[in-house]
Length: 174
Image (cartoon, rainbow, N blue to C red; front, side, top):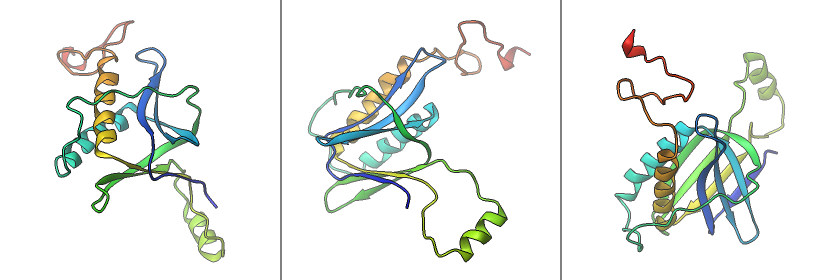
C-alpha cells in the first residue's frame, strides 16, 4: 500500500528553496510535534499553490494576524517524494484549507492498466501528503512564497523570463 502522510493539526507548513537562484530545489514541508515531511516540487507549483490559496482565503474568515510571519524550512529537507498533483479544498466545519499532494508517478501503459485490472491488489499508484492548515497558516504560506519568489532571478523586462547570470537570449530580440 502507498504511503499516506497526514497532518490534521500541523504546527509547521511552508515552502522553501535550497541552492542559488537559477539552480534552486523547491520544497513543501508540513509537520507537527511528532515530526515533519518534505516533498520536492517545482517553482511554478509553489507559485500556483500560493495564487490559488489567495482565492480560497477570500471565502474564509480573515486571518487574525495583520501580516503573517514567513515560515522557514526545517533542515534537512529530505523529500519523501516528488510532487505530481496538488488538490485544494475547504473543510467548512473547521474553516481549514485541506491540501492533498500526490506523488508524481509514471503514466501507466495499456498493458499496466490491464494487469492492474486483473490483479486483486488495491495499491494506490503513489504516496500522498494530506495537510489541514488554518487560515493563518495558509496566509503565512502565501507570504513565504512571495518572499521566496523575490529572492529568485530578476525577470527580463521584455519577455518576463528569468535572467541568467551567464547571459540571456531574449526571444523578443530575435
